[in-house]
Image (tube, rainbow, N blue to C red; front, side, top):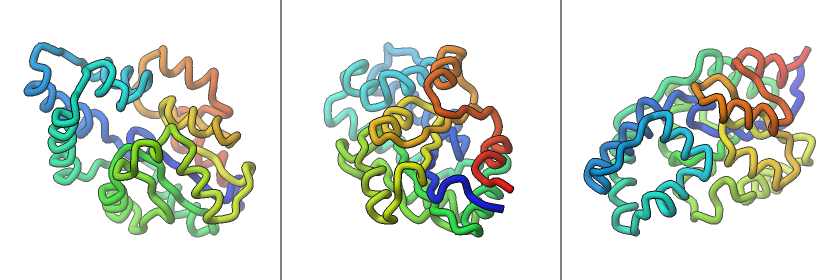
Length: 220
């Protein structure tokens, strides 16, 4: 067996773990009940906003959270993330372990925090990623900004063809394209037809199952 790419850059939420329905959405709704009690937001609408214009823009531009309100929202979210470790999608722990055993580099670029990401990998895979770029970074260092990819490529002396980004939403796609890196759309979490069609049209590759992803990146 061999690897098509030396390095995977994985988003965490709804690509590797099932987190939005169980953690991110309910924690956001709990915060909204205090901050914007007149605002009603379904799970589908929340996912759509996270797709475009993005979660940060949802908070700042759509809901107009000030700094104090943003801090409150993050406090509620952290309480959720610390109390629950989301399940990995079926087949992902096996993919991660086999990829590592073949010498691959596992990195994570996410809007979750590094501490929780590493915890989830320990629980589900009995290992931690080689590098994690999470929400604890400064805003200009988080995806969709190119900073994480640039740092990963410098750290491991990687060329553009040796790296691939796997993400279920637009921020990872934008980040990958800004660095001329191949992008794989993750199509196994529930999405609207609008999101599915956009990701299929704009991804270099698009897979509807974890098995299809594994078969592509780990070859005979």
